Amino acid sequence: MNLIARLSALALGAFLSAVSISAAAQTKLTLEQAVAVALEKNPVRKAAVFEQRAAFAGFKLSRAPLLPRIAFSETYQDGNDPVYVFGSKLRQQRFASADFALNQLNAPTPFSNYVTRFSGQWQLFDSGATWARMMQARKASDLAQRNLDRTDQELVMRVVDAYTGLLLAKRQVEVAREALKSSQSVLDRARSNVEAGMSVESDLLSAQVNHAARQQELIHAENDASIAAARLNHELGVAADTTYELGGVLADRVFPSEPLDQLEARALDRRPDLRGIALQQSIQQNSVKIAKAAFGPTVNAVGNWESDNPRFSGGGGNDWMFGLEVRLDLFDGGARTAQLQRERALKQKVDALRESAVSGVRLEVRKAYFDYDSARRQLEVARAAVAQADESLRIGHDRYDAGLNTITDLLRMEEADVRAKTDYWQAVYRVQSSYADLELATGTLNPDSPVVKP
Image 1 (cartoon, one colour):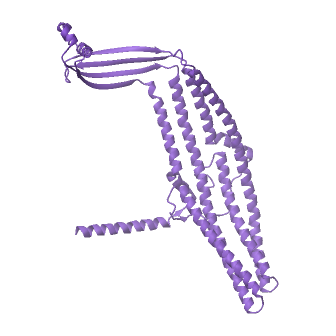
Image 2: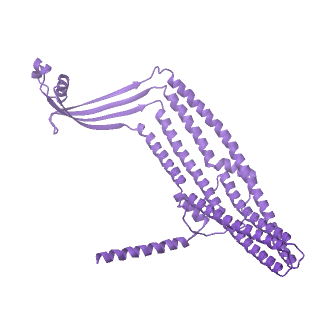
Image 3: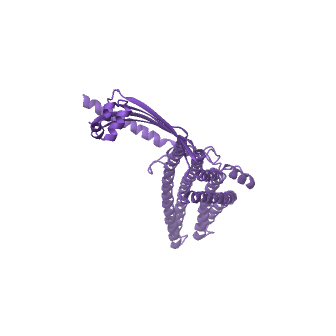
């Protein structure tokens, strides 16, 4: 009975799993959902999250020197070393006059000592080095957060491009199938005309060659769609063979347009990587302060309390000690001077990199702006070309049926129609991709952007 029950449970579990997998396979994946999945599962994004957590832990670590360090130890000692025995008896406060006998001083009997010790050290002043390191670590934590923000934006861009690219690939498959269907119609007409004696054999051969070319284009388009699906899975952080139904289709969309100067100003204000370089400047400035602090003094407080007993349970004495230490390095072979020069040079390097980054951001915004403008204008041309090519192909079919056009003319019109539709869908794709790239360049791309949410 137990075996039957286990087999029944396994069968039920397998059935429920199959139902769950089937339901998951039927789930439509929208672009908004794809972005959410990528922000959760993409390994590159996970690495950036862990980097930010490590940087925040580094900030907490930098605050540790501001507080005293306290340690506890429990030690057992035994031996007949004269100095050890003499000192242990003193610490246990059990030293007697008989212990001054020469034989007791020179060759004492083995002596046990249980030592309980609390010790502490507190750095009271280090010429501001600890505070500078703490500010440096805080800026490093903020820098890691800016890097995470930029990683998120770049990931959203890659998901938008991959998702839209898959939609484009599916549209291209549709175009290829329509072209194959149209070529089949031309092939059938050519065969009928040849059989009726209205056309020569070469017309049929030309139609067959055209049909074979359309078959090859369909195979290529289907393979491109498979590659596009694998690319999207890669950006989502899921298995390459994961399958799902897309919840959207590639469609002609209109996005808001703004002047170039406003986009540049927004990019200089909101780009996370540009903010990150400003944080790097502040971090390096703190490195200069740390290097300067090495020339100043440090003040430390130390102390300990100790209990020495002949037995673990007690029976001895205890003592304490407290002290202050002021330390100033007078000569180190020029190491501190060289370190200060190095940090100042690195600060100047970061300043120069910021100037280059500002110029680079302006260039990225301009390039993205004109790419988007070009894509929008090309889409208008492609939209008109599709209508013209469709009408031309319709007239070409009628004229061929009437014997007014050769098959070469008809095949040329068909090729133009396929190319016009292919160019149109590529233009639709470029509009969406270039707009997402424009938002990425301005530092505003996020899961709530117009390109993500229809």
